[in-house]
Length: 117
View 1 (cartoon, helix red, strand yellow):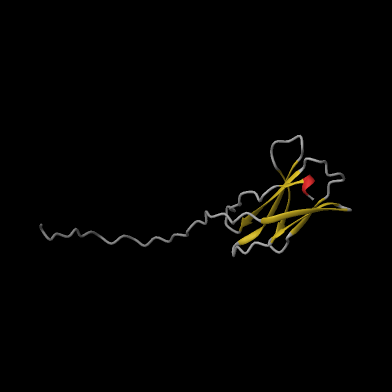
View 2: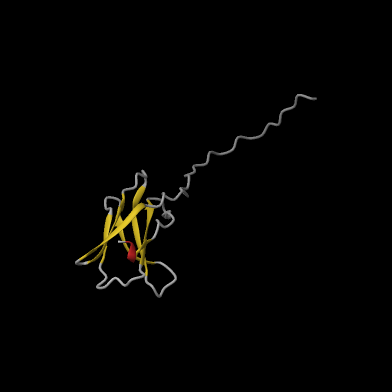
């Protein structure tokens, strides 16, 4: 085998910024209580370093998809869904989102069903 080398011109430096494509873990231990103002949802605080906040979703009994009903920042671990009447068969779920641009959103938490509290 011949000892050969290929020589070329130096390339120009290029600045790159890595893209964050990793979503936070879904929130855990979603619970709910009926309060005078509606349904108070509570969950376990996330320890993700780049967590920006949480998004709250609700699915009514006659719907097949979750609808975004609110968003809170990372310091919050509760949200009051101000339904005047929470019909049986309602579901709630929470996601976590990070500070990336565009933001990365977690999968849904385990769903909370109206009859479970």
